[in-house]
Length: 191
Image (cartoon, rainbow, N blue to C red; front, side, top):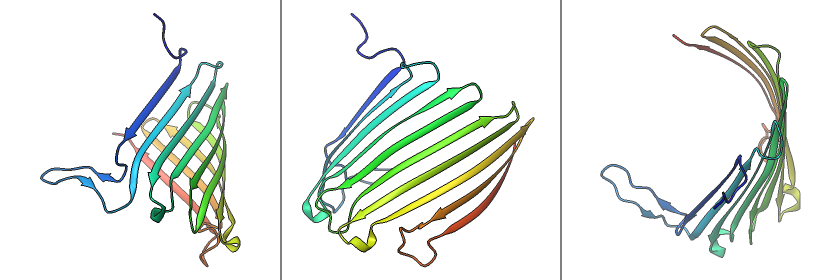
């Protein structure tokens, strides 16, 4: 016999007969919560078999819901990364669909990133994310955008990182404070 998938390829499948169930913990019970969620399933493919430095992935998820819960919820994602030398490029596209929704009908997202290892100690990276929210209300069809640039320096057991991030329409234009700019500094010490 032979393998069902090419070398470097993984497939994951998950199924839940009641996607709104809660997991029991110590001395507690589990079961379905008070929503109309039905069965849910996911499938994911991840592969490095298409070429050196290239990784491709795709996933799909579906949860059956009653109309009172805005219909079925379907999501998918496709993307990949490509590493050449000290540079890695990445792209991802995803969409969350809400069938029969009375408000937001879907979110559609694109993300891009590039990272560069300057040397063993210093790395630089940049990323951008765009998300379109589509609604039955034309006034709420808004695009959220975010971008960030980061630098990380490691010396022995110490790492210092800095990130400059910006988000436009953070709440899809529904809040007065929809634009955000942040600087983050992070220090990690290993003993």
